[in-house]
Structures are given as structure tokens and as C-alpha cells.
Amino acid sequence: MKRLIKFLLVAFIITLTFLPALKIVKADHPDRVIDEIGILTESERQELEQLCDEISERQQVDVAIIISEQFTYENIEAEADDYYDYNGYGLGEGYSGSLLVVGRDSEGYFVYITTCGYGIDCYSDYGIEHLIDTIVENYDNGYDWYNGLKAYINRCDELIDMANAGEPYDIYYPDPEPEPNPAIETAKTVGISTGAGGIAALIGTTILKGKNKSVFKKREARDYARPGSFKCTNHRDLYLYSRTTTSLRPKDTSSNGGSSRGGSSTHTSSSGRSHGGGGRRL
Image 1: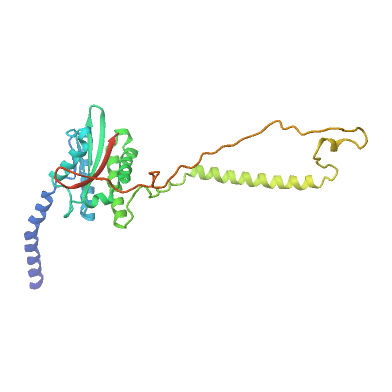
Image 2: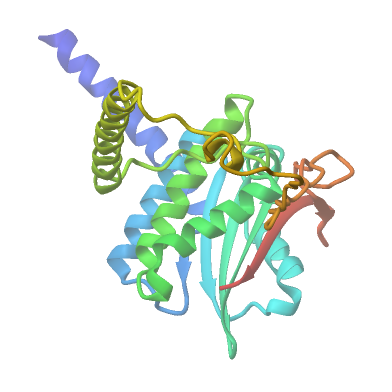
């Protein structure tokens, strides 16, 4: 009993010793989801931030989002990089991570993803475009930013896993096959059944036709004339129609063609760090 009390007392002291330190570490890191425009409810923002916190701490790659009107589309690259560098984002010695900027001006919404450290390896140029597409496919034309951003965050986690496995998502990576459509599968089944029935009927008709020995196909018109009924002194073949088909030559997909290029293009921010990134208007 005394040992148990002594153990609990020691555990309590250790907890009191390290708990303030843990709180300081958490407080030193900026919020991972900031919404200055109000396109999210507070409960939605908190849920997305918890998801970003969990992924960032588990992967040791920052995943963060800021929604604000302080950014300008003309200078978004430099502004996003500086916000990342000077506001404490990035984990580890390489400041690894990414920051999604959702901006708004008189022309509407625009997005930009800046990457740093290992985040550059996780999100190629092609991968960044894919992540933006993920938002667009799920945000219901701007009426459901919560689902669009949640899909984005989860996809970030998946792309980090792929990079950890040595196969980062890039231009050469095949897109996932879509789920089969039950209606289409049913139509295929009906089509196959109908085709099989047609083939069976054709075979049966051909067999019956072959049994008719009284009629034979002739090669030329004069073969149908009764021998000796008339004399043909001249004949010729006339071709009334012709058909020409054309097909496109496949485009060159070699390195000179440009379609096999991948990887991440980088630049240097005002802080001297190397960043990748990309974005567009929505």
C-alpha cells in the first residue's frame, strides 16, 4: 500500500513538472487554421485545426491554413512565403510543412500553397495542382468550404504517406480508378447477354442457310445468264464509291515533349529559405 502511494506521488510530481513545458510548446506554435473572413463556423474551424494538429504532430510535417483578405493575388507567392517564415510555421530543422492561403479580393477567391523543407518533397508541382483540385471538387462552388478544406487536409496526409514510402504523388503517378457505377455495370451485363443471343441466332441461321444447296452465289453478272442465250463481246468493272479513313498521330510524350516532367520547382524567400508552391484563382 505504501509503495502504491509512493508511486502515485512520484507520478503526480512528474506530471506537474512537465505539464507546463508541454503547454509552452503548444502555445509557441501558431494556430494551424485561421479564418479572418468567416467562411467557417467556429466549431468547423476548431475541428479542422484539431485534424491539422493531429496530422502535423504525427507526420512531423506542418499542415496549416490561413483564410484572409490581407493577401494580394499579384504578390501571393512572396506574401505566403513570408507569412510561413515569420509566423513560426514549419517543424524540425528544415521547417518542414505547407501553408494553404485562401485569399479574397474584388475578383473573388484565390488559393496558394507554399511548401518548405520536407514539404517540398511531399507536394510536387503536380501534387499541388491536385490538392487545389481536391478543394474545388468538394467545396460546392464556395458554398461548403468546410468539406473542401477537410478533403484537402486528409489528402495532404495521404500525400505525405506516399512520400514517406518513396513514391511521392507526381505527374507520372496514375490517378485512382473510379468506383464502379452500378447502372453502368448492369447495362454492360445486359449488353453482353444480348450480344451472346445475337451471335447464337446468327450461327443457327448460317447453318440453315448452308443446308440450302439449290442456290449459290455468283461472282459476275454474266454467270446468271443461261448458256447460249446471248453472246457477251465486251465487259468491264465500274467502281462507283470509295472510302478513305484517317487517324491522328500520337503526340510525343518523351522528355522533349514536356509531359513526363515532374518534381517541385523552388525559389528563395526573403528569409533565405527555399520554398515550393503554386496556386490559382477559383
